Length: 360
Image 1 (cartoon, helix red, strand yellow):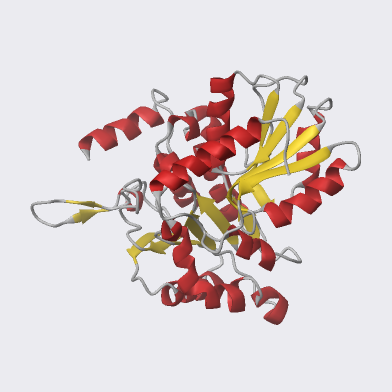
Image 2 (cartoon, helix red, strand yellow; image 1 turned 135 degrees about the vertical axis):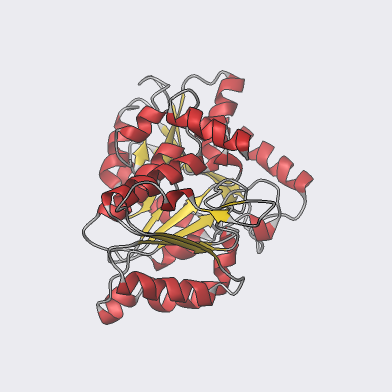
């Protein structure tokens, strides 16, 4: 723990890139000092499922606990963090009600793995996505759902992105998948500062929590804003192929591009699915005006993920001039394979197809 705290100090001083857990702590701390209360619950949320948060520290001798975010400055706002039971419907229902009664508070509920939201689906369907339309009830509740295909099996891969996109209409929710620590920081701050309240569904990473490629310079935390689309700042306007993707696979594609030396392939990241950022995406694609191939790449099977939501919007955006193709896993009844070896083979095939000059 001492080494972990030393590393966070180095991040704050700009000597080390800011990782996901530190970006979250900086977002919470900034809001608390501004007078915005923060309430957080979920399975193992005080420590963090992936040992990344450490919101509460324990003395191994006395058992005493210390929560640093409660001791920032005199007069700061209230910070609460709780480990909730594995009966997801009950905690999420409670937090939904809390967000209604305390709209000035940033209220977050975290699933230990994204698919654990399955147990709370009745709250999501009946209240979170439909409450405004049915009863005029607004909520700013944030759902943090770990998501990403890393060979951990079907129960620990998918947060069921497609379900939330199917439920998205009339600006009822926000569905985002930030790919860097800075993007996550700005997304949380944006949610708390917005005057209107809409539920925010965040697909959060697992392997990227400490990955260097997902870390951000402290300057990116101190300045800027959340961007719904991240254009490719590495490749020039002469790219003849654009890979559009979201989440962890963007980092895999960037690494594969370096390995292959595919300098004429641009990689654009969709950080917000809904509301769909059509204008931002159009601008990002216009930077690569000579690219005739636009490819949506996703980790999920073809009957899941963002494919059915993104493809028609992307085709409308590209018109007749550009051919829209897709790369994804084959349709499946299960969110992911249960074999790590099969997962590795599938991932290798995805990378090969993404950089091949053909698609489906």
